[in-house]
Image 1 (cartoon, rainbow, N blue to C red):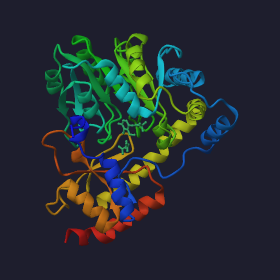
Image 2 (spheres, rainbow, N blue to C red):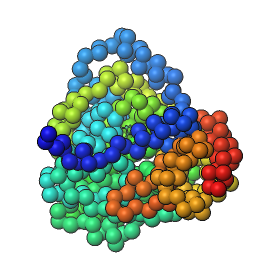
Image 3 (tube, rainbow, N blue to C red):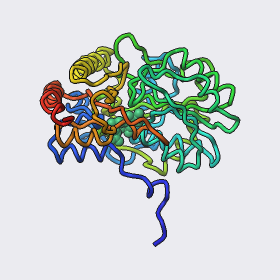
Amino acid sequence: MKPAAAVFANMSTTIFEVMSRLSVEHNAVNLGQGYPDGNGPDDVREQAQIALADRPNQYPSMWGVPELRQAVAAHGKRFYGLDIDPMNEVLVTSGATEALASCLLGLIEPGDEVVMIEPLYDSYLPIVRLAGGIPKLVRLTPPDWSLPFDALEKAFSAKTKLMILNSPMNPTGKVFTPEELKFIAGLLERFDAYAVCDEVYEHLVYDNHKHIPLMTLPGMRERCLRIGSAGKTFSLTGWKIGYITGAPGVLQPVAKAHQFLTFTSAPNLQRAVAYGLQKDDSYFKGLAAELSTKRDKLSQGLRQNGFDVMPTAGTYFICTDISGISGGLNDVEFCQKLTREVGVTAIPASVFYEGAPPTNYVRFAFCKDVPMLDEALQRIAAKLPKMRA
Ligand code: PMP
Ligand code: GLN
């Protein structure tokens, strides 16, 4: 038999599926895969039901239903002051995963260099490689995960087609600072490159931190493709509705890729997301407030049990250093044992790296119900000492 596509054939199943399956097998509390326990806002789900019953269910336009494109544009104006033409500058996709694939396949030519920041979300590298791109990786280091300006500058060259920027960033919980964004913008201009901005956690930002889309910086409006996800903004990760904002010249080729990946997504879900994006500011503030309380609870509990917990400014995630409590286990072994013997699932952070990854970081998701967080912490307190013995 002839071999299948090497990019995928030589790769293991995504860590999120692997750990969630192991979690179910061991009846563990799943603080691995980043999805909330709840079922999203009742009114948004109700709008999906109404649209399913009463509105058309045939193919919508490949660009998305007009009301969602309008809502995405209005949301960009309300939160970031962006002036967006809903009919030419918004593309609705099947989740941010498809948005990312459409952007990368639509822009990258074989041999183009793509600057990416490690640790990085697991779908980026395979799609960059599928498109024939050459990854140029720049690594951040904890606990502050600040951007190494020199290394970033060295990663850019005349061959750089684009950079992928994930802020707020999975798995670190970092929100890029205004100075870092300014530096990135300078490099994009100097090397005439695009930015694919993965901003799925745009509303999950805590304390005094602020999410600033790179697109809002001077000179960046034409260079950036900004990606959002209803999954995160409405705690409905299974819906897989994403949206890309970008200037027509750069969005057109992305739409060409999108038309042959998924073409469109369920119209009732699009209509419900359009409704959701128009909710009051209090909804968006409330979501961040609730999550920051959960972040504090889990951070404190993990710290009390010996984890070295790093600060998290945004996202669903806490990163911890397990060096002091791992008893010599690497992150993968530790997470497997934690699921099997303690009944709590987490994600080994080495999967977010290429090459020689650090093996002492473990990621926990705090977007779960409070009783679940309590149960996880109780199990850790009761059984982690035995697991380490
Ligand atoms: N980007 C990042 C950084 C993520 O963490 C995720 C996980 N959901 C995605 C993209 C994919 O989002 P979606 O579920 O909308 O496809
Ligand atoms: N983004 C989620 C996470 O980081 C997982 C998404 C997925 O399972 N594909 O946990």
